[in-house]
Length: 134
Image 1 (tube, rainbow, N blue to C red):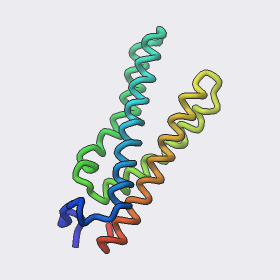
Image 2: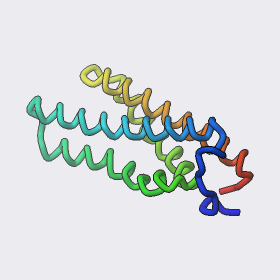
Image 3: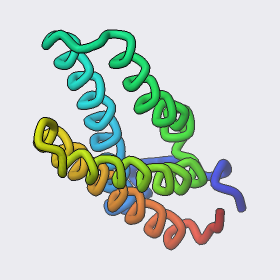
């Protein structure tokens, strides 16, 4: 049975799946929001507009690719997002060690770690409840 065959009736879904999905969506949205707000702050403080926009696109476009799959709650999308989030984790830890962007780096690190943990909980709970593989 594939993941597309499941209807997502909230009354029949275990609470752990619903809660972990809410945390995934919240952390994902917060991460994208932080990226945009940080870019706007850099623009407001007189940064190079072209470089800031290019870096914002590099950060957000790979994450935006996952929006349709997250909305459809496709298990494979959640799995791939967990892998991609690790790349953001590495970059955010490096940023957290820079003097000028320490707060931003720590915030992004916490958001990415939250996202990854919620993705793992969602995937494991979903697979255990619905007895499906990828």
